[in-house]
Amino acid sequence: MKSLQLLGPRRMAVHEVPEPREVGADEILVRVKAVGICGTDIHYYQGESAGYTKMQYPFIMGHEFAGVIEAVGARVAGLRPGDRVALDPANTCMECEPCLEGHPNVCPTGRFTGSPGYPGGLQELVVHPARLAFPLPEQMSFVEGALLEPLGVALHAVDLGKLRVADTVAVLGCGPIGLQVLQLARLSGAQAVFVTEVVEHRRRMAESCGASLVLDPTREDPVRAILDATHGRGVDVAFEVAGALQTPEMAAEVAKACGRVVVIGICSEDQMPFRSTPTRKKALTIKVSRRMGHVYRRTLALVGRRMVDVNSLVTHTFPLERGPEGFALLDGYRGDVGKVVITIE
Image (cartoon, helix red, strand yellow):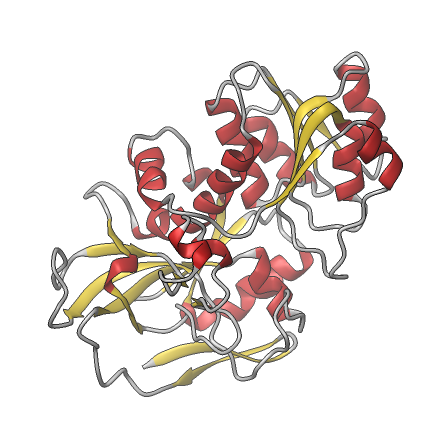
């Protein structure tokens, strides 16, 4: 079967790999149909480990994926061949203290599909735990199913921010996750959402998603602009989604006294700098968001009931054979690129 492999920094090619020979009793065999490219994948593509100890080549990426079940294991109930499913990539132990307390996203022994050492969805067939498969409604496409994973990341972050009706919000960085945080903040009743983004096309997307004020930090001071827009008060919740060295501190500066900061972005320098004095003087609550908790069923409702629009984020689709083009496009943010999806026929 075909797979798209990362062979080294910015080196990709389609290669044949053996088809899975066995499906465990609690597993399913899935024919993959759609895979979203994530910002973490771009870290891998550039040769960065994104927090893992080291890269391993060749490497099959892809943790945002959906497909059709081809076979089920002997103990699998409630799923059958032909079912269309979205797949949660986080295979956690379900036995450790974090898992038992409802925090599988920080399971110390969890295996994350599409991370170094654990081949992902950029191949035709995948064996996956049945408990991590979620049937798609008839009207939901495979692309929408794949995008439930990044929506879940955004939803988990919004949950951490404890948004209230009529809160004010800042979203620093409007890639696909930031744009979904923006949509969810509006859905949660935010009275105003101020966003920053360096890429022009993404600023336009933020406007269409309901941003109150869209700022280009390369041309203006976003801290001053947001403080002016809130009459010096600052925002109730600031979400850092850019993964840049300067944005955690920026989030702290635009948050109100006793406000909340949620850090989502992954910084290439593996740092999260905050100056002590303003953060301490305002007694900020700072939360760091990693992946997601048990939110897949909520994402299904959000997309299935058209409460959020994930399709509007997708600007480019490529077949598996042209997957390297999609990665190169995202690597340089060229051609008005938003979300890139790889489809597999």
